[in-house]
Length: 150
Image (cartoon, rainbow, N blue to C red; front, side, top):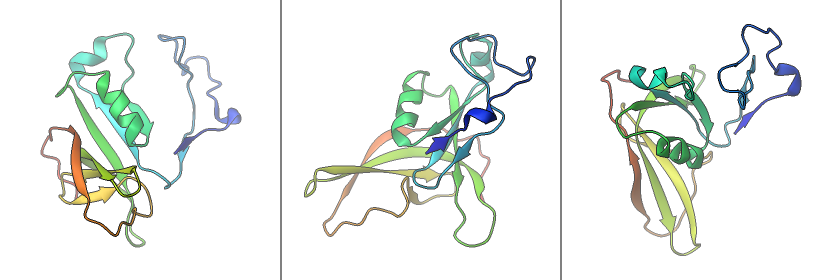
């Protein structure tokens, strides 16, 4: 989940976002580990559009699906701040896919993401538990640039 405080608003007039009046510039942005946050970066040729920023920091998989719907497939890269399992620093990893897992017994859904390092990670902490066999449904597939997350 992404959060801000009103006193974190950018006060310097030259650093504020002026090209798109509906956007507000912030000096700081915080997030919780409740759900994964994703960084969406459009390709350079899309950055010439005045209505697009240099990128989006989106909170949660549902917001990632919305952001991806605004862009043509293959014209952006997605990263996730992958939490460390121990005391190591978290890593910025390239996302290769987003998956939805439906549980017919409860009628609930949860999301998982895949990175260029391989394997699937849940978008929420802790990972949802289920007693039955669940099937993953592909929501989004992203290309990779070959920058592997170690």
